[in-house]
Length: 605
Image 1 (cartoon, rainbow, N blue to C red):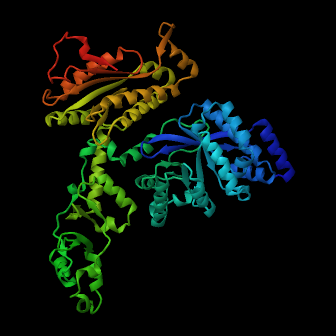
Image 2 (image 1 turned 60 degrees about the horizontal axis):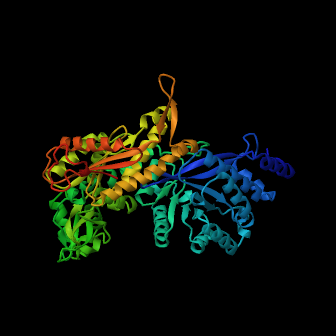
């Protein structure tokens, strides 16, 4: 039962004075890397109060003219809790236009100053609710320009809910737009919603805005949103709001995201292309008649679709058996249309892909395209000319086989290729006599960290290492595998592999600090108690990389390369901190340097 208005005002005053709000955080994830990008900060009122739900809380605050006070308290509590939990990424704070204009200069800066968070990690999420209609866009723009000048980012919430936030988008040019959950719900079943989201994507790409899809609540919705190229996602299927959310993406969600990326399939750059699923059916000429095509279908009962091409081999459409027969099933149709050109009943807008397109790329096109393309097939091109026809059933079969193969040998935590694909890939490079650099990567002082902080924190560090190393790779050239435990290997074909390794070391060294307290960071490590009940000091977890350049023709087996790379890694681990050790014995002449040679042949970075 609702309380009277005066009681609402008193309840709100008590909530503000006693700071009686609970902070919750819902992850926003990167749909390309399967990492957490940030968190939206949410609040709940006292559990025994009618103001527990945020809708009731802010409705009452608006009616009692306490909206700015309540929002100011929300921001203070969210920032302080975000810092206390040491959550990674950005913090999205919901801000009404009224609070932004009237009180943010004081309340917001106070909360940030005492919370100790860098403004670059804050996203002002402008919401359209309550008294926002009374605040003009000029005042909103003026306030946001001040905050953007100080390093804050801006997001517009619930895009598509009303016309005014489209206007704000055009006038404010925010960093992010969040698509209203209405357009994400059941998007896998509604082609109109797909078109709407695609149009938002197109606009966002043209003005440099990043898109966040809200309300992803099913596996199918996640797959469609991911396949459309939406950069960030949020919703119950990913993670629910929680007072102490996790710092890594749930394994099943990460697996879904990575399964749609050709970069993460073992043998990714050698993955199957459209050429591998094509049926080399002979096309028909655009000048042939409907009667001739009908006879062709009668002579070939297994033929379901035929491509129509011009004299130069350029395809202009597709004719399907059901469509043609249906058009001739009525009385007098044969006499009326039999002598007409076959282009009369063809699909003049078929889906066309190049034979070099990977099956992952084709699947993305099919997911967002009209469903008829999945049923009738699509045309495969060779330099713009007809090459063959492929069907959705073959595509699904191939992708399923690839995913099963990838899952069979992938590391269950990082989803990176395991030992079997690592060995096969290395052997394929050796057989082809392709030069590469083998980098054996290992985490230092990982076991005591795992023992002290628990396997969940240890898993988060392993995923951090995997993500950092993945970003160091050119996925069209390089191969990243997870040997097991805290050991990884990169087979670089990129010529600037040294710079890539050094960038990975810098990023890991900076990111790992988020897993330790300031006291541990200041002294460079932490203490644990050993089996003799003595305090033992452990340095902060670091990354060591042992690199060896493999010239063509010198080795014949992955076992030889693995042995040399392991030796380089051992040398790197003997140095403190994040380290790259390069074995240069094979870099100059392509022949190994004699044992005991000048140590100058080995270089540390």
